Length: 281
Image 1: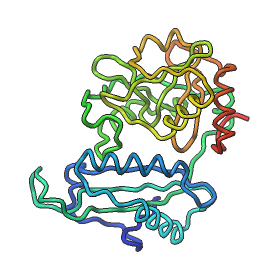
Image 2 (image 1 turned 180 degrees about the vertical axis):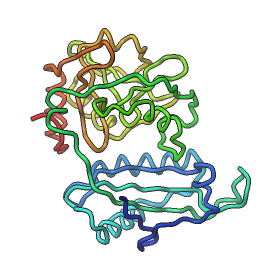
Image 3 (image 1 turned 30 degrees about the vertical axis):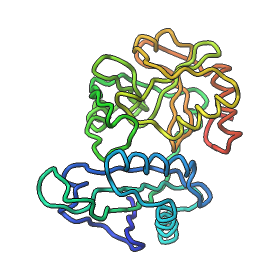
């Protein structure tokens, strides 16, 4: 279970008038805590504050976010060496109706929970994927953000109960590959990489951003563009990125199969060298 904190105190309720509860009017970030520190903190803060501006919400400054997080970690029973933090920002309380009543105080909550890690076998041999039937609606206004409205991901993730399938890949309504239900996706062709552009829908993950930054610094080519679902079949490899598990190779998706190759292992080594401990050794 997650332990929740607000205004420096434990809490397990929110107001029934909170707009996050009624309309999904808000945002969230899920952070990996390692040795008591939030990983990729600057990227998380930048995305949360930028998304809040796009939604017209009052974004807390970095010092408030950090102090609330550290306070929650101090009070939590979770292992600070390795746990998960979730920051939730909503538009706060308001009257009935879609229109916000001005720019009132936001609701800021921090949750702490235990971390779960994929097995070593997943990192060495890859994970099983499937294509989801649920499509992501094209809405550029929300593209990239982690809003509280996750119904598309909820429906997509509930399409399968087979625990051998690790993740489901989602397409938009024009059959473009976008991302996983909880991850971003990269395709490998030889020494060239490609990842879907997150301009119409989907979440622009912080680990995806970290990988793209490292690839650019290393001079490795990675194209960010529209990706047709048929490109899965012509790829030499596929891997997933996520703030919690780092990078994971894919083993198969339907009739398509892959093996973690030299390019993936080079990327994985770069990720480990940057301080991301998860991944194949």
